[in-house]
Image (cartoon, rainbow, N blue to C red; front, side, top):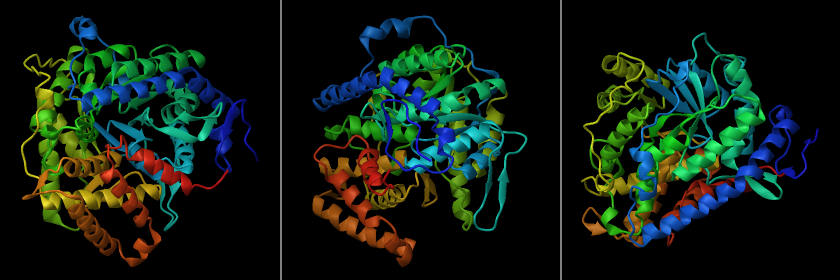
Length: 536
């Protein structure tokens, strides 16, 4: 079978049986319409990001916008959330493979965010099959049989509410071209899920719910809102059917939280503390300045500095406007073979979730089903109602200076080497088509890997002291070679030989030694990924 392509649409990937269910002529026409209407403005906004970063490089600091003061000082609220999003005390996240979707929906969490972004390497098969899995899940027909052992996974009677995270605005979908230009990955992921499932979800008493990643301004929120309005009109659905939670995971966006909610007010159900990408963004935004050099990744915590300030501001902002203030990801995973280490990991999760619940968050994220019960118990103890939006937190006062405060701590040899090892192993897995990887008792995704590689770049570029001496190219090269050998020992000779570790090493080296900090590791990594994709 060949593709049935609308005019101006081209798919640069081989056909597999069943693809037409996801990529029907009608669905492709809808995607093309989205791209033609909103793609040019998306590209303008990406250019605006570059111009804004140039200003930061020259020494300008992020600030609250004078031209939107009226929004911040005005009296308005977002539309009320639907019934199945009133209680979001525990949300689990993960990639879009069938087994993960089933396990997450059955996990006991209130919601599951199916992630086409940081937890998914965007191979063509991952994307198309993931959309097919979600369509089956929406219709309660998804099942999975393990190839080894034949264990069957099916959906249970009590399922989490489904939300979907498309890729960020910066990522292209190079397998699909509209009028000779690669489509936006964001609109590809959003458009397919919405087209196939919005009506079915509404008929079930739910709806098309999304998480929006990596926004940097209220103008980008406005673009998404315009896309939502168009999509609903195109399918004949009531305005406000779509509900979206925006991840505040870039430093510029932290200064525009109110404005972002305002732009999406008919569709917004909250903001989320995307803490890992936020740390990455903090480094990237201040990449040119020595004053912003951070300590070891493990010492940049939610308890102090800019992270503490931004989480408090997010709670106050959301509750003032009637929106959910969602807490961040617990990256820890259960450790089966070490009771002592497992107890320590769970203690860290407990402390983190207690802080969130006490502060006023309305829910939190976990990456592993084994943490759902713990997180729920904590929120049950501190939040007897479905949420705590009524806690306005008027006691919170956060200044621009607070949002830029550097946490205290050392830069260690161990921290530097951990960054190298995590980045190497994550990049290799990503190049193999895996976007979410358990490493060293943590669930690593693109966001946490971004911290590791940008921190290495920052320390090297600024000649920051690591232990007792500045980090030099020679010292980095030596550590990289040694950590590569350690990785080879960890994974074993056969796995190392069969893997893409040499490519990962070369990619990491280019990212860390670049003259200017690359915006996203996933952009060059995507180009490398495409080279190994089957030809159309």
